[in-house]
Length: 142
Length: 116
Length: 97
Image 1 (tube, rainbow over the protein chains, first blue to last red):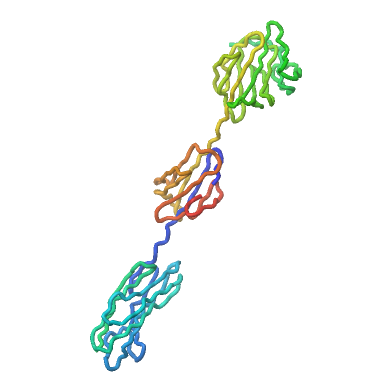
Image 2 (image 1 turned 90 degrees about the vertical axis):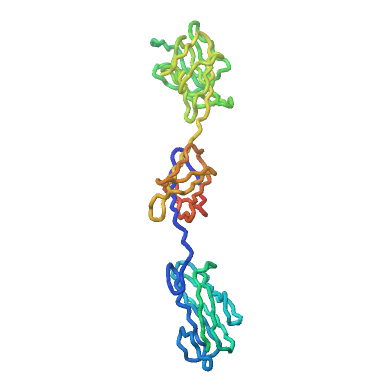
């Protein structure tokens, strides 16, 4: 800047830098909302959120999904990762960018061994690398 | 205080530039200081040089001696000729400058805010 | 009026030395937030000399030399969105102007 002789006056405006998005699965705060995680059955005619599956009637592959809506003004990267399970099935993290005002569904498919029993899946949800929540889903396969 | 002095026939000359003053004097061109005429007996000449801190001549400095005025030329010179000896109020000013030294006949004389 | 000096008869020589008076510039800074409220705790730096705004959102930098100078405005959690010098916007980047 170039200042002149005698008196010079500068007025500066500063504004808060927007905070990164935050939230909880199923409990929406701030700007990004995600639904309760649901378990979808790929085949058959089972309702959502079913946790007890008939061994003889139920297929052994499921998808776990979380739907998120981004109410903030910036794009975020959402990721759903299984951190622990006793299903002994390999899986890949589900990662998607959600634009401002947009929605997406994070899903991953898990398979159960064809063995009756109780299986759990511990997953965490993060936005831009910041863990915002997690939970455990239990499937009684009997 | 200084009594009113007879200025006439004193003149103020600056390398060809004439400044009228309140003393209603006639003006005479003088080509250079190189050979100024000595003052008539009983009178005084005052040859003024205004310079900057690097000893470069300073033009357009305004000199006043009582009611006489003179603007230094490109050589930083003002000459006041055929003055009555005695006390004078002097002042030197130039926009953007301040007086830092006044030496009369090789001797520093006091000054304040350009007044001497 | 003058101090008066005495002019003797005959030729007299007067030498006057003059020095330039340096020009001075003063800079007065006011910082506000996006709602127009005065913003304290802002570090204003002019040519590397820092000042932190108080409750009045102000900093002063007297006795500068007229001409180009580097300035910056920083506060944790905040970013500069406008800089106006003597009524005219001036460019800025990352809080530097």
